[in-house]
Amino acid sequence: MKSCIKRPAKITQIALIVSMLLMVVIYNAQAQSYNEEYHLPTAGLLAGLSISQVDGDGYKGYNKAGITGGGVLFVPFGDMDMPVDGTIALSMEVLFSQKGSRGVSPIPGAGVLSQKINLQYAEVPLQLNFYRGARKSGFGAGFGIGYLATAEELVDRGGGQVIKNGLPFRKFDFSFVLTGNIHLWRGFFLSPRFQYSMLSVRNNNGMYGGRNEQFNNVVSFRLMYLFRRGNGY
Image (cartoon, rainbow, N blue to C red):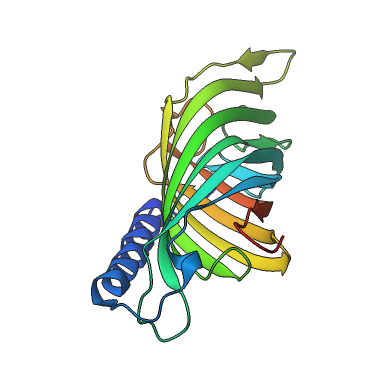
């Protein structure tokens, strides 16, 4: 997808700023009254849909739909003296995620009539979260590493010439993730996420138009369920 060349650098800067702010909160936190939920790990399940693009491939728009799902574990750091009731928790997810792009119009000057990219990753995002327990809203930011399990690309150059998997994608995708966890009912949360590659997932080498370096750009809409120990759902 078309994008400003400086966008990956800006995403990296935002990731560093958010991470530093969360670390400052942790460093300055002091113990307060005991809250059991702030000391117990909490596990959950995730499932949802994603829309994605590959920045730099000559197209624009989140035109590729996919699915995502897996498990999550929150490990809170205990009671903290914060301006609002809450604590910091480290979260780890293990996910299956579909990414890619879909362009169905010609790219001027590139000899490309359409391009479809289907990428399937196994991912492990790690985040620092503002955490208020298994029944209250929060948010998090961090980084993820994805392993490319399968990749398929179809490029239509006209005249019946369709190139399949002409340029390989890198096996690993290192990305910045920003997530909201909006409590809906009992253990259910709406968990939207923005995710952007911090390193290029492929060098195009000018073969199909667009930029040389290309990046996964993904927005996900997920439903999360957190299990709660003791009484309650």
